[in-house]
Image (cartoon, rainbow, N blue to C red):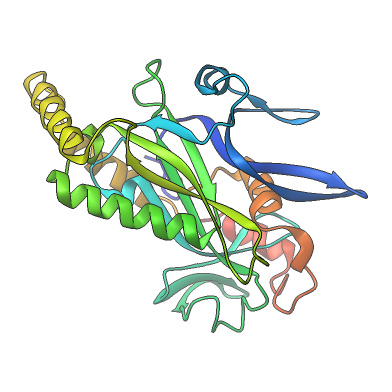
Amino acid sequence: MIKGLAITPPVIGRISIGKVTEQNGTRLPKKDDQFTLTTQIQGRDGWLPHPLDGELREQGKKLRTLPIRLLFNDPDLNLRAEYSFFDRKTGRPVCMGDGQQCKRLTQEGVETLPCPGPNQCQFGKGGLCKPYGRLNVHIGDDDELGTFIFRTTGFNSIRTLAARLAYLSALSGNLLACLPLAMRLRGKSTTQSYRMPIYYADITTRDGMSLEEAIKEAQTLDDRRRSMGFDQEALDASAKQGFANGLFEDDEEDLVEIAEEYFPEADANEPGVNKVSNSKLKQTLASI
């Protein structure tokens, strides 16, 4: 296995709540109030719709519920999240931390430093450091190992998804990968949002199915898989090893689009941006 290259779940599409639009020559992210499933191919008007988007979307209605399954029993393999600081010009990650420690690119290379979180960090103040989460889910029946990826920098989505996965794992006896689940879009308003609705992702059992029924179905599926030689424990172990093989899991060619959509240029003049030269950034990150 190539060292420094994160081995991540195969991605066949994207789940988004919004898109990047151009206004007065500036490309900015625009939020939406529904899910959109896209391919990994972009056209002139943005990401091309995935065929499953049309199949799941009821005519005249917004897509706010997705039937999903998870690949792994370990909640932390399905949802990965950390505080992230991206260089706006290169799209490259400069600092990543978990609230205790971070790996930061400095003039001396990549260093392990204390991570106080974005609210107390002088390096990432001004909204430059954000929580960044990635959730991989399985949708449809065509590719049993292929996933759709949902990326978010929203506290509400990350906190809700992390809690749901932890609770569902505990209640089902660590059978997350066998549970029939639904990814849902929820809304709320706060003082900070000026009473305007903001939307975030959640995971529950599917429509018309109680938690007890979902757990019973998961137990039945787990028994059937084991009888056929399906080794879920080995799959989780392989995924854990693959994630740990690299410093950052997103593909290099995706980083500019990720920074543009989730870490926009609006804060580029804040202190802390581009403290490391682009040449030094490219040289160091290319070596890890």
